Length: 355
Image (tube, rainbow, N blue to C red):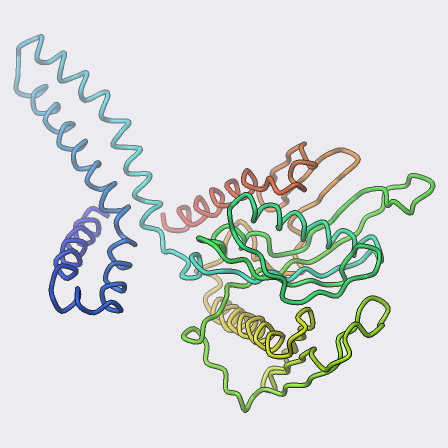
């Protein structure tokens, strides 16, 4: 690890020199590329610098203890050594985390799709509750949400809803939400107070840019039709809704929330590109699943990841056996404690896999 850290430090210096050259400084695209490469390793270099300072102090103390007979000097050296040892261990642990391979999608914006599962109308209401939870979480994180498509049930729920979240490192925080979510509560329509169980699935997709995935226009079948609301009634007198079918894979995306056909088509293409990129990455991951399998969970949409028990004010994340008893606050968007626990578990799993 030490040799790798030295190499990264040298690379950081070379990048710094390149940024100051006329060739790079006069080319905004190249400058941004070099600056990002340097920024990606800044944290490692800074931490390694602190580690080397502590290491130097530790070694100096060890030398004094071996060579000096003066009691006062030895006492000071022993104090320095004992104070420095835990710092070295902390820096080493931090460096191991910083050196873990990074998910290239972590910095991307995200497309989230929520679909009602088993449970009828109550499942649709739960899907709407999940949307509001993520909407409030985004507000707390100062992210921007843009609804791409929705299929409301007419009683305040959603059969499905998809939306895009723009912001800093959105995918790195949201990617753990993918999977099956189960709710246990007494529906408002239940007269006898019985607890019902319903479900919804959440898919979290990194936004795919044109550079990530090229889609051949000839592979697309684009249909337009009139938007419809709950119960099938028409809510638009023009053919503004768009359905795009990717013929090679059969993936179908619809979008009807905008009044403009052009805007609906643009949003549908965003979702289509994200789904195709996810399918491509899933296929690649399957080929090396033994190397990449995460102990936090596969993120598969059918995998039940979390239970929301309203009578007991309890949320349980089954992947890391986390249980908290403040469900009301979580539904108001206070997800950070859960996200941080999932990130920590993911890092621990990857660290264990590298040792």
